[in-house]
Image (cartoon, rainbow, N blue to C red; front, side):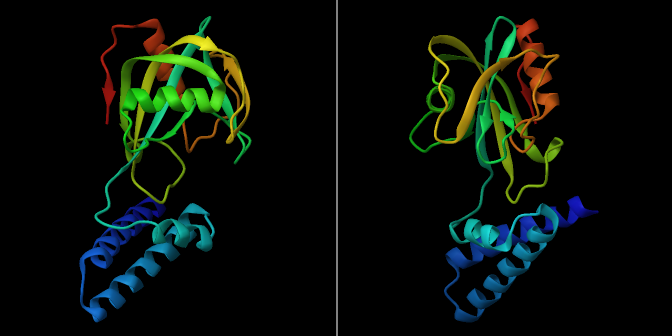
Length: 205
């Protein structure tokens, strides 16, 4: 039931954001602001985020709301996968983050891997495009699509970035404590399956 409430809160937030962006009537604007506040209260209850953080996120959103795109790189070396330790929660994730405007998916992941791990890579294959709502992640305030791109290691050396504090390669049987909002064990295992089966068809949804 809590997941359903969170889904409703996201829909209310999306409608209120569109209304605030396009409405000209002061009374309608007031109603849409109230709807946004209600959705924020529900988000606080079910995501564990502080109201101040949720409000800050919502205030920065304008226009028609669409899913956010998060991209992650699968970089292998000696049958181990590259992971970085996030400063924000001290847990491990695949290098990546939100896609930047003006860069293609390949350009985005090359940039993200370099900034977060110090390694140079070449993007080789889109292995998965997943709707986060259909997979077991902690509750999130937005609707996300997650792109996973398999990359080839071509140079560089391990070096932490502004948002990361450690860089290592892990075997499938010895994964660290994962930052599950960014990637799950099921997804990491899926990527190892692509390593073993290079002709495997891209996964989506």
